Length: 268
Length: 169
Image 1 (cartoon, rainbow over the protein chains, first blue to last red):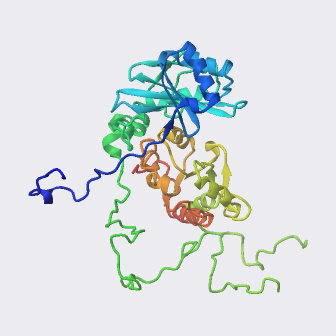
Image 2: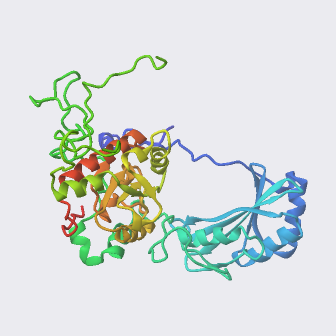
């Protein structure tokens, strides 16, 4: 029998609840299903702590401790022949776990296999650079620092890569607003004119739908819509498209559309 | 009388034309607008097409220059990021007076679709703009029409308007 729920306040509740909706999960399977991955995992497990390991969409995912990241990837490169670091970055799980997840996507050309190494670090913690092993990690780690604020130790040039050097905040964190915080909204004004110019220039217009319906130019008719086919001239004479002032220009002959001849036969 | 010598009394009078200094100066300025190449994004492709042979900006006297010292028109063609804002201001300051700015395309006008933390919401927050050109991206004909409108504007204003401050926003 279905559990009783009070129905007297049913109108106050939203009509639709997603109580039957389940977030789709990518199926995980055991590492032992793939002989190559199983052998690799055994080699890693022999030296390092492996917190979790599974196969997802044909790729092995290995979760390790963050302190082991350099030595695990060194072993992956030199011993297990995963000779390419195709991608690395961080994922912001600060809201749910208080941690960043850092992943290294690796490819073995000889084995034709892909492995993802994952580890988690706290917000204030830092991670070891793998730039000595893979040059591709150079910009990836700088971008990780730029976008998430994950500090990487032993990186040769730990500097922001996309945002300006004097930028405050880390834009890809979930807590960062899409349209920027107060610093971002005044960045160019503060930098070029100084903070005292804020009042003169004013805040950014972040409303893309904002129409000034009393705009003197009226280049858009939004806000002044009329039915199709209505005469909108309001008694104003029609101004043809002109490329020159009416009284002409000094030493330049004015183009007269009425005197001009349109050549219909271009081969005449 | 030699054949090459002009008979002024016969051929339409003396070679004298009366006009004002403003008109002569503005005639020269409006017909030799040298523009700074400032393609920041996809609008820059349309700007390049305007300068190339099919649309042929040279016939209006508009020649793209690579140096702000030689340019008097800045066609801001594309998305201006916050990181780049200081450079556009520096290049604008390096241009010699008199100078004009055409804001080309939605991104330069208002930030366009990039309503994000990294995009300047309209170049008029940084440099004064003479002419806003709508479109995403405007076709080369539109940019040419904008330059012709700018020519009209130049011809209307006083030749010695360098000291007149421009309104920002």
